[in-house]
Amino acid sequence: MWQGNHTSLEDFILKGLFDDSLTHLFLFSLTMVVFLIAVSANTLTILLICADPRLHTPMYFLLSQLSLMDLMHVFITIPKMATNYLSGKKSISFVGCATQHFLYLSVGGAECLLLALMSYDRYVAICHPLRYTVLMNRKLGVMMAVMSWLEASMNSLIHTVILMHLPFCGPRKIHHFYCEFPAVVKLVCGDITVYETTAYISTILLLLFPIILVSTSYAFILHSIMQMHSAGSKKNAFATCSSHLTVVSLWFGACIFSYMRTRAHRTPLQDKAGSVFYSIITPTLNPLIYTLRNRDVAKALRKVLGIDIVTQ
Image (tube, rainbow, N blue to C red; front, side):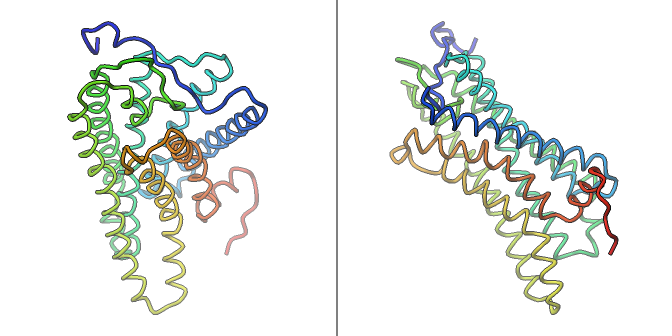
């Protein structure tokens, strides 16, 4: 048990995203289409990277981990939302809420760290291209992925244990479509000082620190690009970083909007909008950005689809 008081194990009510109107039925259908695109695109990216030997490099290994995180993100949130909407039931068990809270924080935190570490990969590729195979090898890529998963999971476990030990009072209605911690913490009727301190530390470790690392890496990258004399080299360097930089901007922009606003400036509608963007839209866009803008992945896709590639 999380707590001696048996009332702590009561179910929660998820208000969800949609009601029974025709407009919301259309939006629900659209969400499910986006969900299927996200699942298909991320699964395809992982399979392509595993199947094509040319993609067995640290950069693409990290990209496969990013796709795995995006895949998990949509599976953690959307199926439960869809089940509740279609069945007319809005409840989620205490254990189910705790599990969902732990999983989405683990995956979200791991993605923040992984994107930051991927910026180091881009830094090495642009600033030290001749030493890339030495500075960025398969072993280091695996260590980066493992470190991202472990640190984020430990942080999420601490968050979940502290939050689920707090007393919940009144009607347990979560004004959200999953157990996101800002929505859940609003139901707490006890002292949340310890939890707020934990959230503050986590924000520094999993959001501000990765942003600083990304910014530092791209400052060095920009400096190196500006020193290049060839216009073609500059164009290739920008192209090498553009996909990652686009994904980073989308992901951290949504996270900042969702988690770095004060409680006084938060509304349920804004929380839902931010969550929809980083838990549904971003996982759908990420593989499309990398697939459409990455020549190697595009070639691997054409090979799988049986499209002839004209050698240059």
